[in-house]
Length: 158
Image 1 (tube, rainbow, N blue to C red):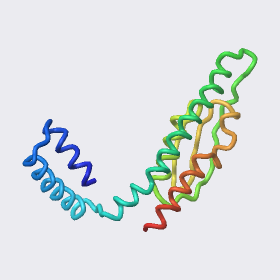
Image 2: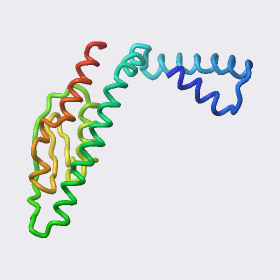
Image 3: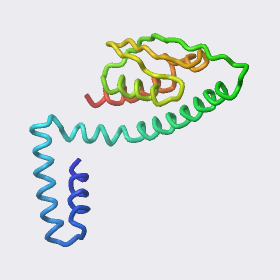
């Protein structure tokens, strides 16, 4: 976060001189101290975020791959007059410990064509699927596995 503050300071100034850099270091340190004190942030959370970057990158690429696969399935349904979609609701439970993991799973399901997260109540998800083929394996998808890995890494640091 400190480096982000410093980078924003330097970008907004448009040039780098010794005075601007020194003043930016002081201002960034003050902002970081304020963030840690009043916004419940810490250096420990900063390190955790840095350790989770590889997981987020992997999650992003898996999401892109799953979006592509779901697009192909939806296109197949659209362009095949013989195929009649069988829409339906799928209910499943997860054992995530954090709200962030639930939010990421719900958004990932919604971003994937043919599926929409209708509700999340506690650990119970309700997902509407355009076709039963898209509903298969939602509860134990690759997203769930990656999010559990991320939570396990986070638990090491908490």
